[in-house]
Amino acid sequence: MNSLFKFDLSNLRGDVYGGLTAGIVALPLALAFGEASGAGPMAGVYGAILVGFFASLFGGTGSQISGPTGPMIVVFAGVFASLSGDLGLIFATVVLAGVLQILFGVFGFGQYIRLVPYPVVSGFMSGIGCIIIALQASRLFGHEPESGGTVPALMEIPGAVADPIWGALGVGVLTLIIVFRWPAAWGKFVPGPLAALVIGTVVSLFLTGVPILGDIPTGLPSFIMPDFSTDTALVVLEAAFILALLGAIDSLLTSLVADNMTRTRHNSNRELIGQGIGNMMAGFFGGAPGAGATMRTVVNIRTGGQTRISGMLHSLLLFAVIVVLAPLAEKIPHAVLAGILVKVGWDIIDVSYIKQAHRGPRWDLALMVMVLGLTVFVDLITAVLAGVVMASLAFVKQMADAQLESLGGVTSDSGPTDASPEELEILSSHRRNIEFFDFGGPLSFGAAADVGHQVRERVKEARAIVLDFSRVPFVDVSSARAVETIGCDARAADKRVFICGMTAEVAKTLNGLDADHCLPPDTGFSSRIEALRAARDYVDSVQGGGGAASLGSSAAPAAGGA
Image 1 (spheres, rainbow, N blue to C red):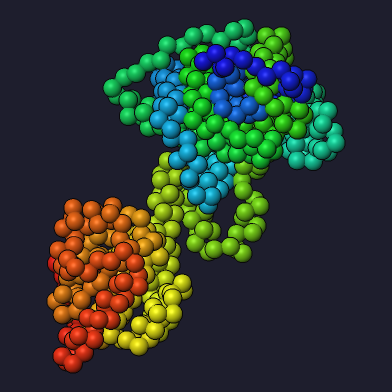
Image 2 (image 1 turned 90 degrees about the vertical axis):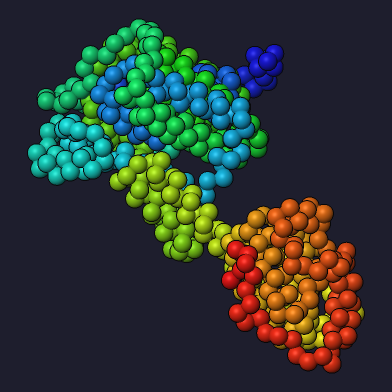
């Protein structure tokens, strides 16, 4: 704990400059995110201050800048709408999301959250970008969406286009031009979003009828007591879990970006704890939930920030600004913030992958499109769960196909790739009488279902079957039942099974599941050559006894067979 409050001052100048620059970039985004959430622009600023400060203080990524992000605000806006503006319930969701993130970190879930496949991440991030753009489209034309949700927002766009408020449309288009075309050289001194905020607001002062933010509370945020009720418990718990999971994924992805830029390695679980503490504090004081923000983190690193001092200074700058300049924010037009958020939404969409996806596996593209569609038209948690399940099934199918192909690639003619001359001679001279099967590694449950059929097709004329377990460190129930099927099929057809290289752990598992009851007790060998010699001797001893019975309909009672 003592090391938690020790600060690395070796890069103090870079951290100060990086933190101040990140704070300037964060201000217009925080206002825009807060307004988009429904909780008001100051909720976005309070979220940037509290999440940014405490996530930097307690987190595990030194250069990370945290605050409200597009994905978090999309979910939070849905929570705000579904709970009818009840602040106690709304911010109880944020507090609970923080608690869940802390638990994720304490129980070491950080390493597992990063296992979400890239097409799934790309799909839901791109879907969130589309949602942000859809929700802001009407505001660019001067109209406020009457109801929440992506589909209602899309339905209102034609009406807004047909009846625009020309002043709002003018400053909205001006904002879009600035944020999309702002020269990178100028951005080193004045970030594009900040320039758009100032220029768009100044221009709107000379126009009439442009909707603006209006009254904004000043001063320090007030404490909000979280409220729970049995009627809304399910909604609060579901929303909190989505916020916690999404914030964790968003933050750890940004941590990976920071690692690549700084050549460092973040602490995933500590980062989750820091993000959780930050979101808890934001919930207690009316701040929007946040996560690691990629753009702000990149700005911080590029301008010198390397340690948590930069993230804390970013928050302190925002705090100083709202205390002094909050009244000026009342004149900011909705259309300006909408234009800034459209740029944010566009940046979230994985355009680079979409352009190149047709050159990669078609299944990954289909998975990405499916997750994107579910994110936009159903909900985020359904999209992520469906994507992970489908990706996992596809991976198991690919592994199963590869394992079965490898299993079928070793024949009596070729033998294993590392076979000795004696082993090759035995397999060659006893072809069709001895069939050799090499399990090249752990047998997945996807392949186990077809192993029995694969063996049965190969051993119709064979009298001895050699199974090489040398590279099988463990077996699961599916694999054990597959081995049971092979043994029982062989015994029913009067064939002998010889096993080599089986570890004590694998043997214990087979024995514990009674999956070895059809295997001869005296045919286990430590080496492949011993098993092949024994199989040769067995075949030679029965060579004159007539052909072996066929493995036709004699099926074992095991579940792992064909």
